[in-house]
Length: 214
Image (cartoon, rainbow, N blue to C red; front, top):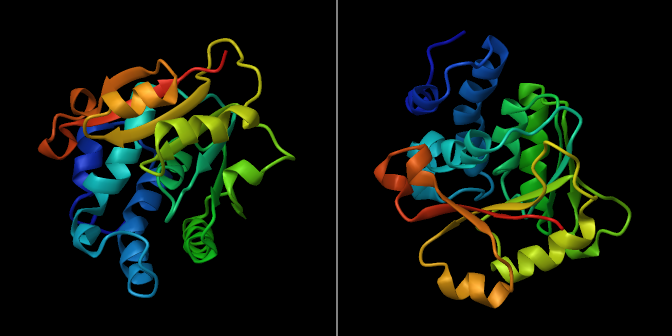
């Protein structure tokens, strides 16, 4: 394996049990996202030098807090350039991830990256989540896409009944003061601080929210 690009070390600081294949896949993301970001703005230009911390590790907060079982079907709502879906698909190779977005050119990037690194547990669809009528999922994930009220309204009709010993409902990554947003959603999410999982300054006032499916 080639020398890990600068930044991958931050992932290995918090996760020690990656296989060589997973490390190769993670290492390849740096060059692939730099290349694609030159063609299509899939992540903020100012973040390209901190891909692993701001995007990959942030996405993997879900993996640090929850175990996604083999065979689970997970929908990533509004995946954009593939977050949190691509890092989670690397981390959980036996879990199936369905990445959806309303912007087709971003899914073109996701498809290219999954092919380049050999991710066989990802499918993509150019559609708004609220338009999906033909599939159900064990879990929905999302990262800074929309207010919690909307995310839950989109997610709930897509969810299967929970199975024992597996996370259910909606898990989303959010930041800032969420009191008003949570109140408006009418939900009572479980709230976890990302900083408690990864004590880096970048993650202060960043949160994981889980709205469980009842």
